[in-house]
Length: 156
Image 1 (tube, rainbow, N blue to C red):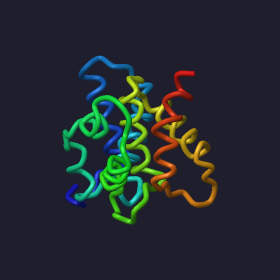
Image 2 (cartoon, one colour; image 1 turned 180 degrees about the vertical axis):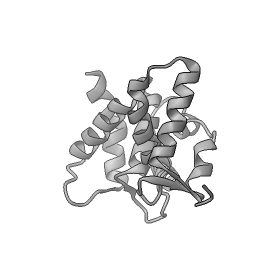
Image 3 (cartoon, rainbow, N blue to C red; image 1 turned 45 degrees about the vertical axis):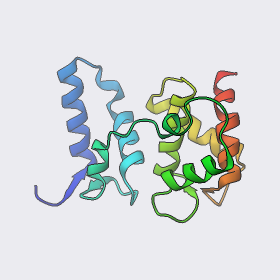
């Protein structure tokens, strides 16, 4: 439609068409659309704009696994993690798309299979672990809590 946006409805249709094509059930399409919008929609509107859309195709893999395939994270690693997931360069990870991308990688790093429902549950659990109520930004101290306690909470 040449608006420069992919609306929620258009994205849902794309996801549903793909699900139909591969024979996947339609009941996860809404979760998939929410997940895509949360991860790739920087302005948190209900559509993707021309700046959001290219990130859908950024095949970089799991940043945490590249940074530290095994073992513990160092202080420098934590700084690099914040820099990587901090899209708006404010020195924190905002609850929303930035946090969802981090949590998805944390779960994958811990060999936990990720789906839309689990991702939303774990984002809520991360915010609860970090005792975030009104300020929805995570700093290095919060990041340490998430990387050390969140996977254990899911597995335990």
